[in-house]
Length: 182
Image (cartoon, rainbow, N blue to C red; front, side, top):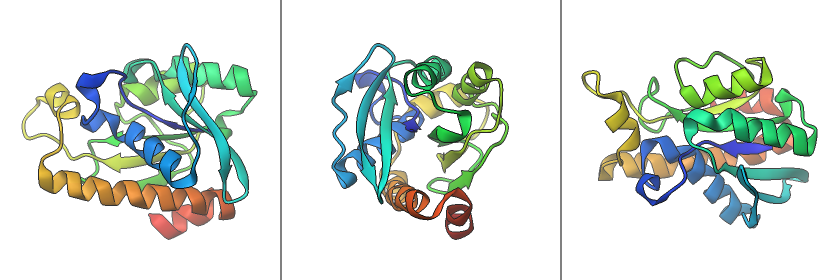
């Protein structure tokens, strides 16, 4: 199950916080997996990537309540935390930098904190995509704001790398992908 984090609604479509949604949308287009099953907590698409059955997910919860959507996925698909790959924005990485991890802390990301609280563990794989850190302490306008043209180009490239990495993960596994893409 691949869940991209983001906030639902038109005002957030191009925000930094919605990079996870953008990745899931790109995966949907690239692999021909339509996101058409609308449920209370998530929009889902089921298909195949590199011979592996996958579910692509865009939560219908706000980022800070991502654990609600993760809990729904756990209950519906009977998955373990290790079977949920979360794609999300990370202010501690430079714009466009991609990092794949098997587990880790939330590093202050409220969406990841919510998933950790729901599962009771930090042991779930994730792909972090750098959205840069704001100058000063104005974090909320930064993550809810759009990318400038130069940043948007870097993000388009990063989303392409995530799409490629997901195919590699499906075919070769998470550890091989970490060695190749980190």
